[in-house]
Length: 41
Image 1 (cartoon, one colour):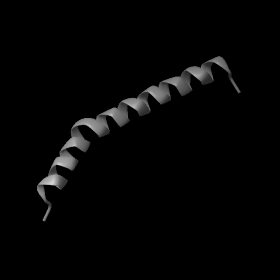
Image 2: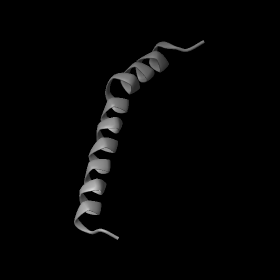
Image 3: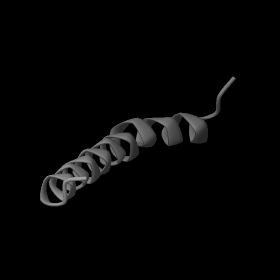
């Protein structure tokens, strides 16, 4: 049984942290793709 603190933690993770991590992942992928287009192997 989860306590109030745990519920608040998971709510914050879902609302703030995970979307920010997805945005960061997208930005890093975009930068990687741009770098690859400037320096073909």
